Image (tube, rainbow, N blue to C red; front, top):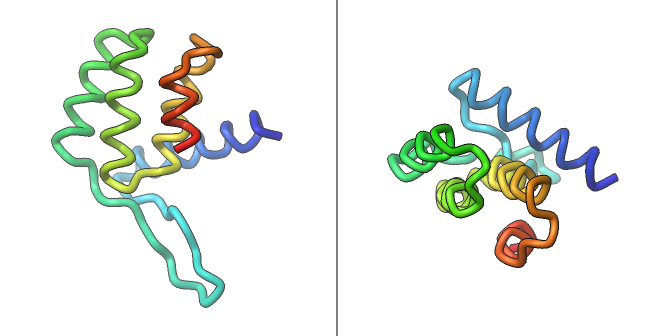
Length: 99
C-alpha cells in the first residue's frame, strides 16, 4: 500500500512539474483546493545539484526540504521515498519523510 501511495505521489509530482502547474496538495470537504507554491530558487538549485549526482543522499534531502518549504509536500514525499529506495535505513530520510 505504501509503495502504491508513493508511486501515485511521484507520478502526480512529475505530471505537475511537466505541466508547469502547481500540484494540488489538499482538497477540503467544501471542495477548496490548496496548491503548492511555484518552484523557488532553492528548489531549482537543489534539483540541479541532485541531477548532477542522483544517488547523493545529502542532495536528495536538500531537494526534499526545499520542496517542503515551497509547500510541495507530495513532491517532497516522493523525493524522500526515492532516497529510501537507495538507503532504506537512513535515519534522516525516515525522519524527513515522516515529518
